[in-house]
Amino acid sequence: MNADSLQMLIPIIAILATFGFPVALVFVWKWFKLKDRELQLDSELRRSAGNALESRVQRLESIIMALDADLRAKLGPGPAQRADLLEGQRAELMEGPGAPEGDPAGVLPEPNKIR
Image (cartoon, rainbow, N blue to C red; front, side, top):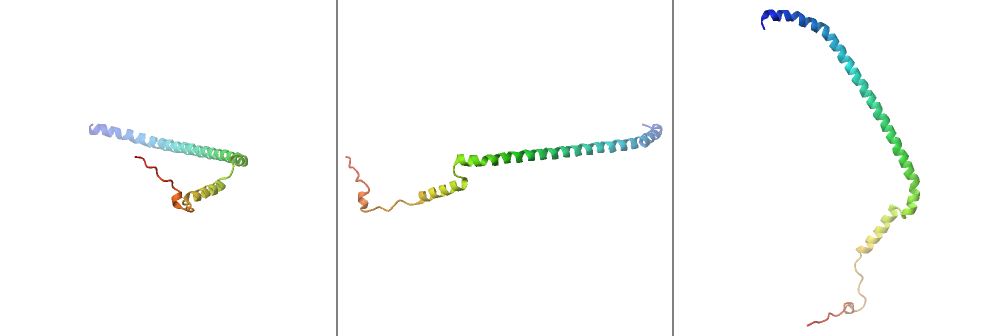
């Protein structure tokens, strides 16, 4: 490009920049307002979905607690009572064998000799 053609482009670019810059500013302003509104709607939707989920969980917990008494009666002793029973069984397993009474030789039979 030569210097004369560049001199002709300067006024054209100046006019485009003068009138295009405000248009670009308005476009950017509206774009970000739209994105901000979308984010607000999304956060409201998530909040209402979280509240709905929380209410469902509370309703399920109340139903389970209502049925819990019936289940405990059917299942038998509760976990605390079962733990006590298991502890008693463990104590019995950890005890050593009883002391032999009387003659220790009478406890074991004599081995058979095979030849």
